[in-house]
Amino acid sequence: MNVVNWDAKKIATSKIVCVGRNYIDHIKELSNEIPDAPVIFLKPNSAISQNLQTNKNDVIHYEGEITFLINENKLAAVGFGIDLTKRALQAKLKSKGLPWERAKSFDNSTVFSDFVSFNGNISDLRMELFINDNLIQSGACNLMLNQSEKLLEEVKSFLTFEDGDLLMCGTPKGSGAVNIGDKFVGKIFENDTLIVERTWLAN
Image 1 (cartoon, rainbow, N blue to C red):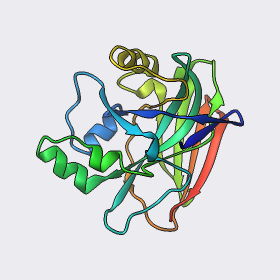
Image 2 (cartoon, rainbow, N blue to C red):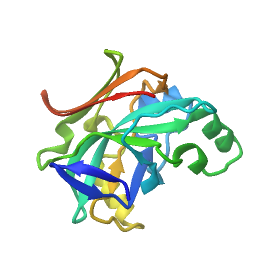
Image 3 (tube, one colour):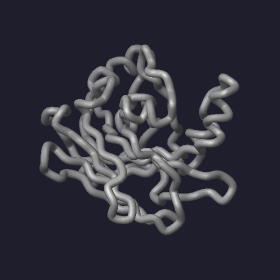
């Protein structure tokens, strides 16, 4: 089973709970409708990878996200996640009213930084994604349509979180294609204090 790192411990993750359409600017970016309720989908353990991979058959898009590790049904730790998407396939599936799994939940479709324990004010958290030293995405918890604590309770209303599961809280505007050789740097801040940083080289 694939694992993530939490405070230097390796943690098995049974599933990744993902939230779509949680930032207004990203909704507009993809010409989607603002949802009446959180858009939730799942990724399996096999979606976790240590490497940021492209695909010779499909254009892969990145989406940087504030991600929480769940322990004892609480948002116990925070990290940076990149949700990878086969965007053309997703658009095709959406046009037919079909599920997104083929475009979102494929093997190696997420990468994560280490996770650090967090018990501060979640609204103070924000993320930045740099590609080739350029700031491409930035977003904060207080700008989400559905706040992280609300998302936790919404998911718990119909799905059981196991310790070590992950909650990806959606991406701000600025998503785009992953190119071989691109350097990605994901950062999480608490106010102006950097608490998480991870670098990936796309291959």
